Length: 327
Ligand SMILES: Cc1cc2nc3c(=O)[nH]c(=O)nc-3n(C[C@H](O)[C@H](O)[C@H](O)COP(=O)(O)OP(=O)(O)OC[C@H]3O[C@@H](n4cnc5c(N)ncnc54)[C@H](O)[C@@H]3O)c2cc1C
Ligand code: SF4
Image (cartoon, rainbow, N blue to C red):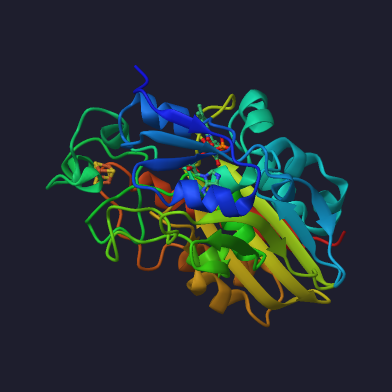
């Protein structure tokens, strides 16, 4: 059952920040995650602050320096279908089109997608686990077949749920954030918090902080980007394993790369081991075989999810092979 709460719909960012700074307030964008969280009692909220009247948070447009700025309220469908996104950052369009179902993509927003709560079934259920302020992680000794294989430190083994966050991180996107102390910028790769730093929160955003826009830098002329997701069901499902690639190519060699994994860790997981293997090299069979081995370096799988390592090896092999093919 939904708890009772008050509802406000401010018309300026300043008022939104003021309302959202109050104890027990939560921001409402598309509501596809928030309403479920309220119903499941995993957020203690008595005031819902709608973002829907904020004109500055809509729209997708090119910037003067040839980058792109996406309003936090752009829907996932708008991101997936926008011609500028598809043309300049195909990996982001692919990531957005892999999110949930058409109905959820029509309603859910990019800002909300980055800030959604994790999907661990204990957390979403009636278990007072570590992430809810309890004293144990039920998944560690319980059912964890969809949980993390990297970066969990055996504290909390959630996987970060967003399909757009790994691609935005790979592309070097930055968030514009309004808050009680004014405005600031946060790189998407620094938005999410690993359990060892704080198991009680998912993002570095403080009370009253609102993502207003997501800025993408001008893509290098030789940039190739992609997102690949493996999931259990075709209809809608979160990633079991996925990889976001942003590769700058010098002919058939990789000049620079940023590689982030989904379905892997409590945060979008940067695979520096793959980046180190492919930098400066042609994507031939030898490089790809080494990347296949590198992607699972330092993994810490649990007894029920070792199968994910094979998935990661498979996705990196297929994605790098596709990137290496002449267009
Ligand atoms: C059945 C189902 C399947 C799904 N499958 C996938 C999937 O496969 N891949 C995937 O990536 N996602 C998936 N999702 C998650 C879905 O994409 C998110 O629910 C959606 O993107 C959230 O957007 P929203 O606008 O509805 O956010 P809301 O529900 O309104 O908000 C989500 C959270 O973000 C906060 N928030 C929202 N906007 C801002 C902002 N601008 N600044 C700061 N905080 C903000 C809210 O306070 C809230 O805590 C699924 C969800 C459901 C219900
Ligand atoms: S994985 Fe995290 S959210 Fe799930 S039970 Fe463990 S502590 Fe809770």
